Length: 277
Image 1 (cartoon, rainbow, N blue to C red):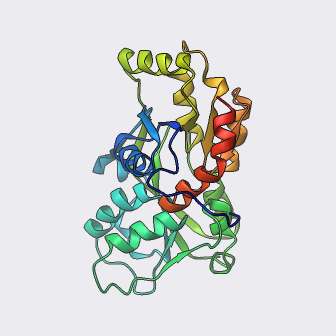
Image 2 (cartoon, one colour):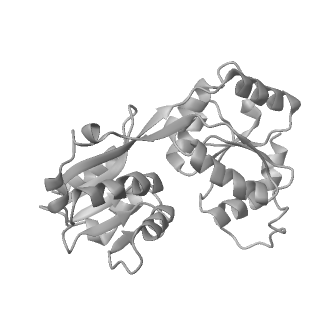
Image 3 (cartoon, helix red, strand yellow):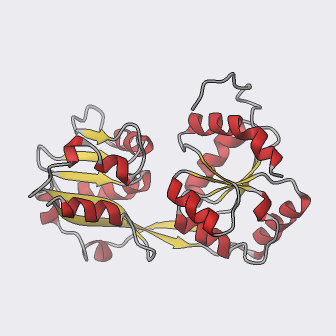
């Protein structure tokens, strides 16, 4: 991000109206810090995240997998929230097992969740916040014969196939700990009507959608709503930006999801976002 003089953070996003599509708990956190920076925020959650039952978890995961694991990869902060308790429940890790985190926010969630004074090794790619960046790390190049666990969510749309396939191609044994489930959420008629009214008023600037699954659920929940094409789609990865363009969004911007970095990125994009209204 280039260095520029930024406005007072308490009012720097005044004039922007941003629709937050994240699951409710995460969306509320994002909404709070964007609102604190002056943005008008509309909560429009289109996904729900729930823990999976032990029966469902054990269809792909067992205590023996944990005992033999050389590395445990957490794909998101949700993976930390729902997966770490499962790992603790199932027993001891190998003394040399390494935790890997995709992205700085996941690494921060891990450090926060581990007990004070923990000596657990946590590795994350820098820079980069995706599977490609993690797979480029030197520690994950020679994994032949190692047992790797990927802590992730279950989705009918699939998951981190690149991560699984690449590690297996490098000779690792890969087990999935699918500890939570993402499901599409149908918004209420009142929520749809309120969003439609906002779009018709012209007082809208951007939608925030962090995954293709979120984007598809958003599109389903706007099937009878007009005017979203005038808005900017804010995403965290080039794959989601490409999916957005394929679905009719002409303006897509990749932004970081770290609290301060997101606010700073939106400050710099503000003239462009306002121009799209």
